[in-house]
Structures are given as C-alpha cells and as structure tokens.
Image 1: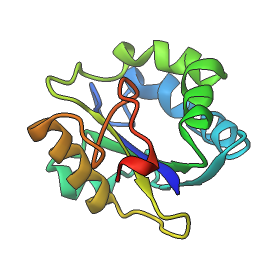
Image 2: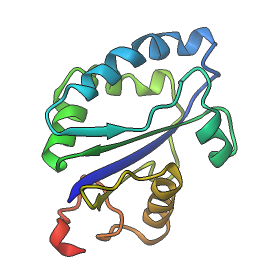
Image 3: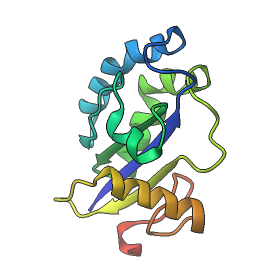
Length: 148
C-alpha cells in the first residue's frame, strides 16, 4: 500500500498576476524537490499557468489541485514539513485564500494504483462531509493500511 494525498487551494489572483509571480516562479523548483524526495512515487502534473483540468472540476480557474503518491506517511510528512517545501508552505497566505473547509485529504491505495483527480476530490469531499476515517483522513489521524 502507498499513501495518496490531495490538496486544493484557491489563488488570490490568476497565475499571470504579479501577486502570484513568486509562487509560479518557485513551482518548478518545489516540484523537482518533491520528485527527488525519499518515498516520492508520483504527482499529478498540471501547468500552474493553465490549470484548466482541475478548474473545470472545481468550477473556477483560481482553484489549483495538488495530488501525489508517497511510499508512506513519514515520507510525505518529511517533504511537506521538513524540506525546502516548508518555506513555500509558510508563505501560502501570500497567494491563496484561507479555505473554510478541510482542503487536504490522505488515503491509502494499492501500490500499483495511480489515483485520478476525481478520486482525490471524492475523498476530500467525503472527509469534509463525514470527518476522518480510514477512507479519507488528515495528518492528525493515525490510520494505517490495516484499518481498511
């Protein structure tokens, strides 16, 4: 089993706006960091300057989707909170609206499965509606693949 994650964010402006320039200028570097991080398996790739795929699903060109697959929770946690990603993560309020609902979900998948954006959004919606369970959870929970 591997760990999948999805998170969504609503940008303060479109990607061509000067407000978003520093975010856009750091995207390739942060993606490369993820790609080379221990435990990284896969990430959804969408051009941040043209987020048409996820925008159609979320109903706005200002929404971005980040989705990836990791070997385990520890690998994802290390990348998010203890790598160079942390500096960008700390600056999110410069570029994104505060989300009124949970904006990130984790779930376990078979090792040979690559989740779709629709699957990830379904997990996120389930978490928002029903709270944490083995089906969809956050870093706060301690669910394991054995809980499925």
